[in-house]
Amino acid sequence: MLNHLDQVTLLERDRFHAGPSPRPGVPQAQPVHVLLMRGHQILETFFPGLTTDLTAEGALLLDWTADWQFLSPWDWRPKHVSNLKSLICSRLLLEWYLRDRLLQMPGVNVQEATTVNGLTVSSDVTRITGVNRTTSAPAKLTTR
Ligand SMILES: Cc1cc2nc3c(=O)[nH]c(=O)nc-3n(C[C@H](O)[C@H](O)[C@H](O)COP(=O)(O)OP(=O)(O)OC[C@H]3O[C@@H](n4cnc5c(N)ncnc54)[C@H](O)[C@@H]3O)c2cc1C
Image (cartoon, rainbow, N blue to C red):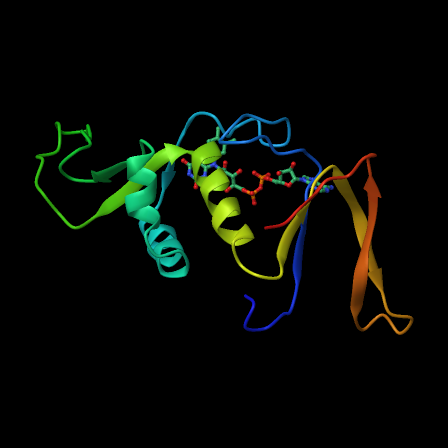
């Protein structure tokens, strides 16, 4: 990302808490989520050590054909070990981890309590020039 830009600011309506805590903007975040294989592989490339770190925090790396039990219309599918593995954890945990790793990158920051209302465009409507936003006072800018 920062190969292309000097600075990245993430605008977020919610305020973040320390750790993987619930917040209103993602009511679905607490239950278990499955990070499907390709997404997991891509995230591990961007954030080396992600799998080790998240499993240390309680995420599970499960083999789709050995650790899950599937019932087909005919019978339970036989179990066998494969390389088809997915990371299982709450979205809260994944999001908190990724946010922390992102904020370690120079030039990345998060502006909390800020609602994006729309985009602003150039007068010839060929370029996006910014965003219209509303910030609840006091907005909190998180950087490292
Ligand atoms: C019941 C359920 C189960 C799910 N299970 C899985 C699963 O197993 N695996 C999986 O990969 N995905 C799953 N998902 C989807 C997953 O939870 C995410 O919602 C999805 O990946 C989209 O994530 P997102 O961060 O792009 O958007 P969202 O989750 O919608 O997050 C949007 C973020 O933007 C903020 N925001 C919204 N509007 C504004 C605004 N105007 N200005 C500023 N900030 C704003 C919100 O506060 C929030 O932080 C599930 C979803 C549900 C509902």
